[in-house]
Length: 162
Image (cartoon, rainbow, N blue to C red; front, side, top):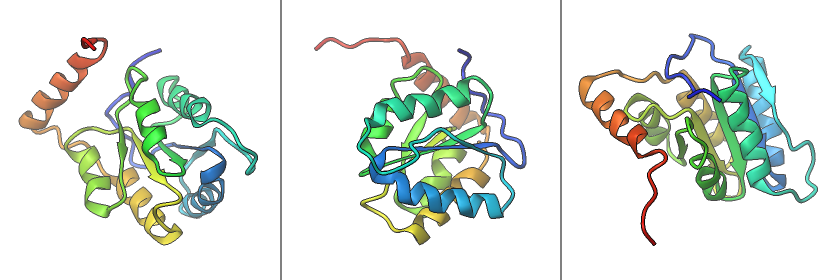
């Protein structure tokens, strides 16, 4: 699998995924993004039966790495588990965002390609705002942000002692 590209088209293809806790919020976001004519990839889950978030997080990450989507939105109960899982996948830079500033800044400064949300933490209205901010943001490409991103990418594959 290739590293997900930092170059976003004007109207990016958005992959959405969730576990059972995020199902209702994902449905609402699919509707919202569909109304705005974003190309969508729904990686599941498709109902509220209990599932494991790492399975759907991996599906979402694969959609980005295989080039079927440009950005991803992954939803679980808190957003934390999905974010941790996504950041284990080489080429993925996931950000857990529950405020507007972080949602766009994670892209502009850190070139995040996956937005993680907690369905039990934020409401639908805020989720829509965050997704729009994230999807519409672009990496600044400023030298200081490129330098920092290169250092982050260099961390991939380096293990620590425990």
